[in-house]
Image 1 (cartoon, rainbow, N blue to C red):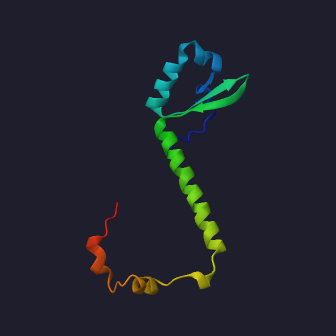
Image 2: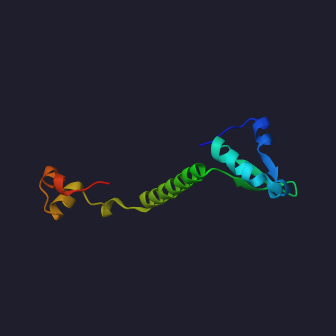
Image 3: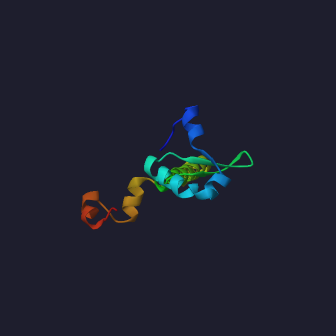
Length: 110
């Protein structure tokens, strides 16, 4: 993930909406695609959007999804009661499995 923080680099990657509309869009998209460095698009001297590579976007989506799953898991753990837990041995017994090696070949892991 791109994480450059020096001011000069940041300033070099800012473009106005009007510049983007004057034929700069293709150049900016190519630059972002090649360098993986994002661009900030300004409108009325305020940052409005950011142009990032698809790889960066997918990585951010993955991070967001993992974070949401972590929050859900944390909530479930904090709300769970020990008396509602089922032991591994009980699960094995309920499924009529005596040994994990017995089912090893029948389980397909992606």
